[in-house]
Length: 253
Image 1: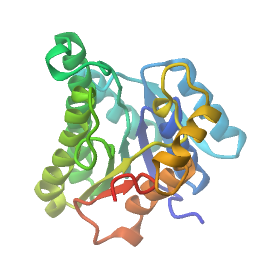
Image 2 (image 1 turned 30 degrees about the vertical axis):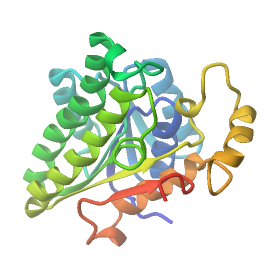
Image 3 (image 1 turned 180 degrees about the vertical axis):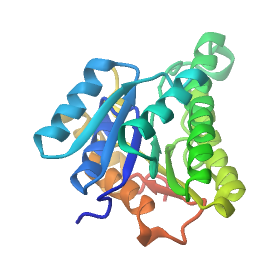
């Protein structure tokens, strides 16, 4: 399919994991993709993979916690490809886990909330500003099944941040649908990405562990999560507003 031919798509956190898979999937369907993140080398790898497959992409280094850099990112996206039709706000960190709430450091708490919540808000702020002036667009925020849907011990900062992303997504969806900006979220569970690996765990170890922990008996493939993002960004989801699509192999069922 070529659902995104002639469209410009911005993906944050596109240097690795799910962000890279999402960027590749949009490019495979004809989009011009801006791969954004903090690490230039990994972004350039993503762009290289897209170009090797015949797609079009550019890397823009930006930290979503910095308002000036986010503003520049959106402007650079429009400058390079002539517009911004779809944004996927995927950048996020996992930090400060393994301890109960009372033992989370202020530094870890601030870092997680700043990246995972404020970063999504700043990205949407500037994405929406452009889209609302230029005929609308679609935004998909990457949240998590952890937070609004599932809770586990000793992960308070991350759980709080991702529950906030779900709430922020719904608030933004209501605030801006009348401007032609359609906003939704995808909440992956354990998936084929580095963040789902425990310290020292291999992919094979993870697969064995999750055979019994997940109702489906396996993690979600990165391509399956990407497919959900592309659906929400596509015209086929034209009446889907403020949804939070959970893709977690049944963990939250």
